[in-house]
Image 1 (spheres, rainbow, N blue to C red):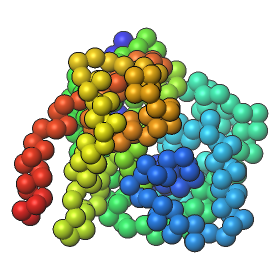
Image 2: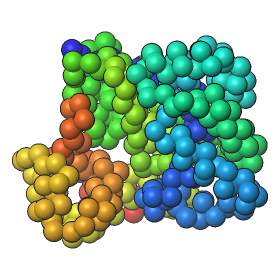
Image 3: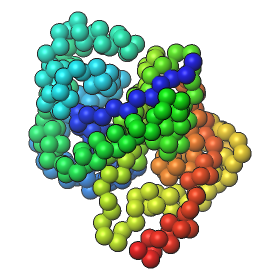
Image 4: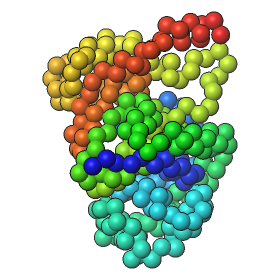
Length: 301
């Protein structure tokens, strides 16, 4: 059964994505924003609030807010969504979660209130003051990406948006919602339910500083500058390997291979084949198309 792709965007998506990027310590070294962004944001919040953010977001690790954002019929600004979310009766909270097949915690109403409080604090202390060009750019990206859908190219649009994630049809998957995000670049994250998948894909919205290379070019050249990553690409030439097979062939720790695959995925150098819950990798040579010309253009620019 073929799935359908829908592009969706609202400010609340990026607000939650930016909070998750800040809290998700395991991904800090892989993000373009870097540790300097983390330290800058930390300085804006009292230690007690930082601790509460970590505790609440940890509790929601296995409970995604995306189904609620997508289901919200009201204004989906940060304040508009939270007003609607806060006003939902417990029965409505459970009904939306059940519609997506999401595992429902017994303290859902309490968890909702805690999450809403933390998101409001995040919006006040950080998100409401970000460069407006970020939100404008994400809105434009979503509109441009949606315009590419023609009713028969859903898989292609998904793979292009995610720079190489190939999502195969399954018996259950019916709807894929993709959302552009800025703060967690270059990471791509997905949450899979029975019939729905939500994918947040990376977008370079702001132009680089004068004289600096574009982020996409920088990710590509960095990915190619490492011996282990080149070896992984050689292993993936002409075949698909899963994560365990790559670890075995390379002979390094799982955490190290995970880090290298993030770099290769960010550069668009691998295709991530996803069928149900099975994932494998292969080489994506088209990422190298025009590389000499792009380098020449940058050097002469």
